[in-house]
Amino acid sequence: MSLPESPASPVYLDTELALSQIGDAETMNGMLLMLQESLARDIPLVSELLAAGDMAGANRVLHALKGFIPIFCDMPLCEQVVRVEGLSKDSQSTAVAPAYRALRPELERLQSEVAAYLKAHAV
Image (tube, rainbow, N blue to C red; front, side, top):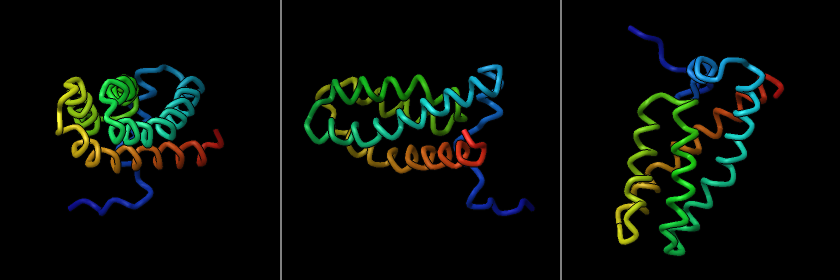
């Protein structure tokens, strides 16, 4: 029987995966700072763009997130981002907004995990 996961344990952020892809901790920490800035800016921006009906704008932002997420996260979150980004390629899709509403809390969880890591490592 496994122990319950502590609230502080990352669900999405996988620094071992990131380090294996990036190569060194200093560069990884710099990229984590960029990820934190991107998430802080882009999570609300996608909601704003979708509310304004700017599917092309939402797609551009989601496409950028799709590029960043696999460096730092395992497949479940990556697959969610890929799915929502794919939906956003269709400018007439009514499925994007509800799909993003489901994805947004997961991205916010990742953002919290990145912030906690940066704070714990004095980055």
